[in-house]
Image (cartoon, helix red, strand yellow):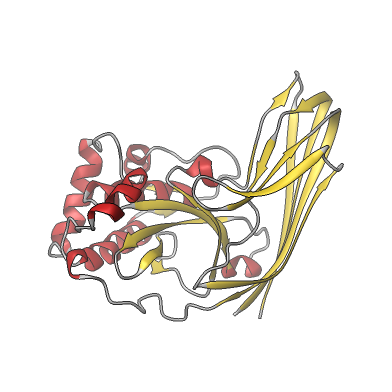
Amino acid sequence: MRIQVHHSTEYVYDAPVFLEPHTFRLRPRQDGAQRLLSYRLVIAPEPAGRTDCLDQDGNVAVEAWFDRKLTGWRVESEFEVETLRENPFDYVASAGMLSLAPQYPAAVAASLAPYLESAPPSAAVRQFAASAAAAAGGHTLEFLTVLNRRLFEGFGHQVRDAGPPHPPEVTLGLKAGTCRDMVVLFAAAARAVGIPTRFVSGYEAGAAEQESPYLHAWAEVYLQGGGWRGYDPSAGLAASTRHVAVAAAAAPSLAAPITGTIRGSAHSEMHYSLAMQVG
């Protein structure tokens, strides 16, 4: 499947402000699941300098810095991607992956530590995860399917344009949330049974059919033999050709499309537009 996206974000301030250095994670990754055919990033006005780099999680990022005050600026990202993974289960999980909690080789486990909770999960999250584990008979792949389906079928799905995701306990209590809220709860439950999980920011092909399309979020879990594999609790499905991954990280803030701060006092507004074609 080929997916074309044009994503524009504009910031407007009611007084001049100075932009501190900003990080842009808007370039889709290129891996076994997707091939990047073209990409263009425009920052206007042009920053004083910019550099392409890899961030702490291996995402392609642009670091940009500025040398003057602004009352507004915009970012445009345009790309075409060919998605390749028709079958999201095209792998053979190693023996240590079959039962909860999965066992990883020592060197791999050390590198996956950031994707497991450093603090014990709450009682509510442990109970939620234990219920899904019991329904899955203690099997890892069945647990991921059960967890994904429970979030899709048992929770209301909302749209909230701004703000960080809710803590998992809040989403559990509300029985509702945005895609990013669902991912944080999915990750907390998966980590509670020892599955390394990360937050993914990107696009889903269904946005092409929406009147007001928006960015999407889902989870990826690491399974020895299959690597990072996506699960989308907002759809109840494993991620395949309809998903375009842009950035992934242990914490949602580290996968955000744009991060940075301003210096000065001003009221700000953000406007965005997203156009997508799927073929």
